[in-house]
Length: 229
Image (cartoon, rainbow, N blue to C red):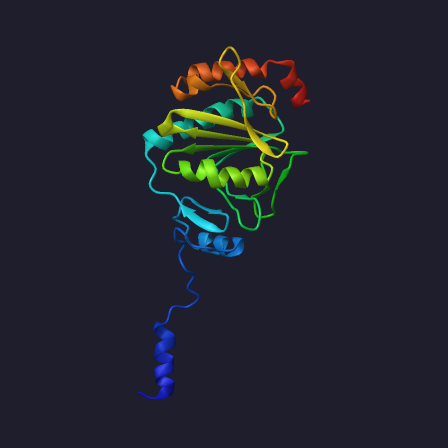
């Protein structure tokens, strides 16, 4: 085989413009992370946290699917009766150069809030509220992600630690996350989204009728009406 023929043969069998697949533990820039993610259309969830790639394992309905749906039901009721807010389910968020999470749920103020929507349709900046269902990812959600969300000024962060049977609702206060406590009736009230009330024990028990009843009570308050105006 002549040298020119060999060169042609190599060019024919060599992969052209091959983009490496995302792998757990990859250390990537945000742009390279997005390039590889876009090249894997069948991939459902991957996140860049502090420059490291995290990819979700298959999700069980009992440990993630059902609690995720319960969170979305609660936030969906609030969204339905609160104009000016946007609810996201598993949306990629461009927080900073090293962090591009895909939180289970987010709630953002559309006009005058601290995040915006990019020309290509991504959330850029910190949504006011992020919620995560933490089962196999609990160590990431309550450590690395918590630090990232705090640093980027996510005002409220909810972590449902499903296997621990606990739910934490953090409020950013003077640069630190402080746990919001339930009142005497067992209700936690958002300090950023007036009327966003949660019966934590009802949610943990999947008593969605009670969860909806309580958030509907919050939606009737003067504070919520003023917020919508």
